[in-house]
Length: 192
Image (cartoon, rainbow, N blue to C red):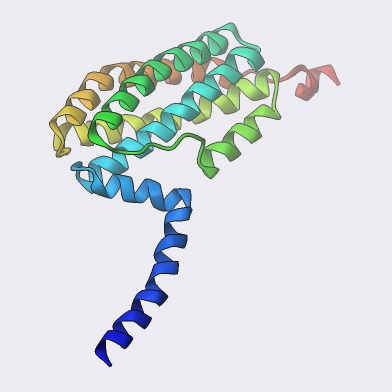
């Protein structure tokens, strides 16, 4: 009978739906789908949250492990500025019903792990090289969102954050240039 077929179909579908809802990633996706924010804007929010989290953690690492005072100061500024921006983004995402990641993605975690094994001038050079690359990417992404994002509040936040990112970008290039020629005492051929 038709009712019997429908019942069998329902019995097959229910466990699949229940198991999908048990996975945290699925719930995050569902919550974001219920949001009125366009998919591209949601993607930007998630990327900005992941990048911001990484900047805070890497900045804290730099303020502890760097040998150069300018790298330590840059790291502290990254941690402070990106924490402020992350707090603003969290509030905006909450208002919009967009779930943001709460831990580093694999790529940022690998970067953190790699940098945490370095010290001295080696750390300074590697960290600053990453900061230049990262801020070049960030400026492009925030510029794109500020110009062509769909959500007016998110566009305004991206536009408001952009000057700080451009300042970080310039400072990263300056500090990076100042530490690129320096080598660790152990690696210096003159000392062997």
